[in-house]
Length: 294
Length: 108
Image 1: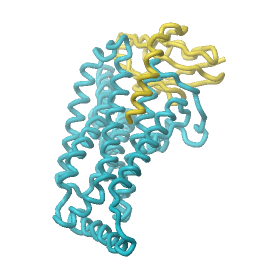
Image 2: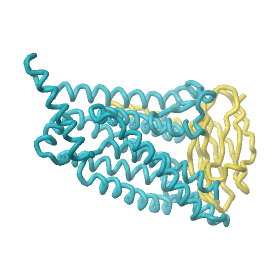
Image 3: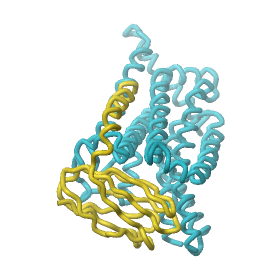
Image 4: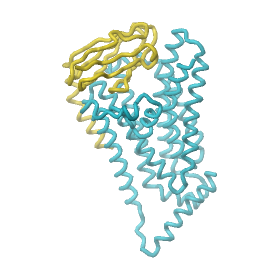
């Protein structure tokens, strides 16, 4: 039972970390719970479908079906997160003003919120399909306490997610969305690196140095902390050069993109009026805190 | 993001053609064990490893030491491209049966 629980926990943990970052980044949005819950439900359904068609997938594209499928899902998630991050940096200030005026949660944020629902669904689908195949094999092998192991693993993984969420909520509201946006950028960069990993093993990309460095003496990929760092910041103890190219390019594009978008929409104000502008944004943030986040 | 995608696509095209020229090796999974448990590979060479699963349950070929993560269904086979490696030992395992499914690449 413990072996089953441990494997399920590791898979659930990866999905839970992604869901947690997305949940934090959409804090205060109305019907957010439904979006995240819907994303998880959609992901579970997708996981079952993927597991059922695993043999078909394995034979597709002359044997590279699995890699292309995984890389495709990961790149789709990177694009969706990227879009959300850029959208937030171009509308963030406008949004906090709107929220102050309306005293309600973000309405227009919903457009990119739908994308984040899909990110949640894809994360659950990817890890979930592995769990389904694993349990199928365990059941065929006559393992004991299958359901207890599954329940334990899911609960433990979800608990870590909730723990991280509770930790993120302690970030002061003024820095909160800046922090969650940065986390989304790092998350996307890590996913891009994983996509490269799949494309390398399918021989669709060269490795460009294997490994580029070895920091497994410090933090191994197989350790729980290493796995957490892998999801949250794209850490890899022995990365291929190409993975780091994908990671660095995603970071650069999103970082510069967000800066560019922010500069585009920064209103030109006379020096004298700047303090009041700053205050109103801060007020908006604290109002948001009292009204919708408390 | 567009730049990233076009770079990826540009890099993929010539590589699709070169996929057939690499040396091949075979690993077999039986009773959730890799045979051979130590696979000897030449250094600085890209190789194609064919994994034959003779067990009635799915397995996931995976490594923490090099890019590899692929599910192999019961009584079927997959192939995976790895390397080029510097000389050394690289561990791999079967994610679904970790107590027994352990193996090492010996690159020399």
